[in-house]
Image (cartoon, rainbow, N blue to C red):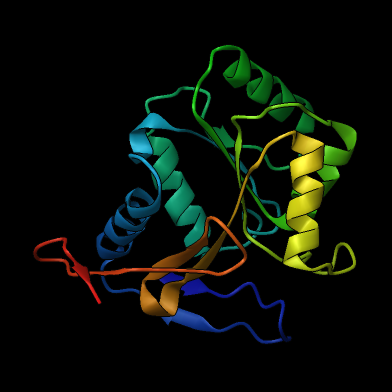
Length: 190
């Protein structure tokens, strides 16, 4: 598998050649479960235009796997079909399903401007950057806007680092953290 960067910091994309995709997928699950609960218990809704429209996205590989192992049939990708995404969010809220809305920052802002919610239990996982669609704002400003528009205090950030076969998460602030796991014993390394 060949993962490519988003290319938003310059005109050339970097590429990372992955010999064992299962190793990468196992790391994503272990990292998620280190910071949150088991992947299976969540419904994953993904609003990731740009990522879905290009080949070689490590984020899409991760979310595809999370959707596959989620026990909730509502899980899925929502490219630009905001009406359907709103319906799924409403359904998840009504049925008290633990739900994660994964989204690129500009898409989350676009969606939430048209579909403001009051969903206190919703976990929002923004992947950062406006990708040239909107003016850049600070992460603190973004999180404040998302909290107001979605009515949730569970606003987190994810940053994928395929070169290191891992993700970083900012769960309680704008500071990212990560862990390394060995493949043989699945134990954290410092």
